[in-house]
Length: 226
Image 1: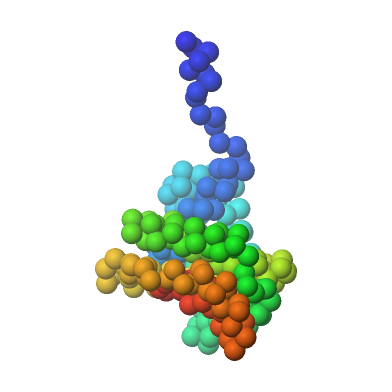
Image 2 (image 1 turned 90 degrees about the vertical axis):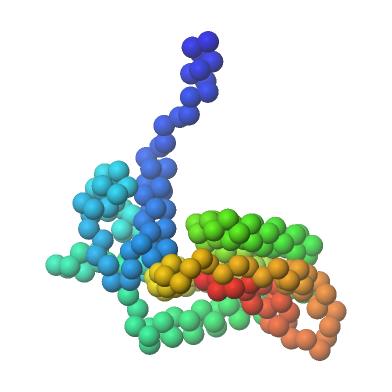
């Protein structure tokens, strides 16, 4: 009996898993506006909040600094990155150019496997939105866009897009705080079956531009996805 119980006991998380969990929780607190743009990120406070060592907290701050989410300054410490209106405009200009290029490179009509993958990710997104699962919404949203952009066939372009998706996290934090004051998150659209079917249907239409066809896949989002 003891040997059976020993076999079913969950194994302790590895150091890598513990580190990843601290990064995930800090990122989540920023995304959902618990730490607003410009907020100081004090190591001792984070250690208590996440029951983590100083080493793990510092590594999380370094990781999010590399992603452009956290800013570290001498004599000030770490803060949630704050962008001016002009910086936001510039970031979204670059992201728009990258998104458009990826869209233009997606071969049409899209393969059935891509249609099925995007359909399933959209289903997951809607389910998590219905459950008001903010973390799940964020993960499903990013997974949807990475899957879509990966169809362009250029991993370097996809990586650049992911970098700019990360840069918008503090901006999403501001939106999350606004939504938290005004009520629940808006529901996802229920009439988007054509969105994931778009490439197959529109591929035969020579009069439609490829970028518009890919917008039908998912670039025109059910609601304000990041």
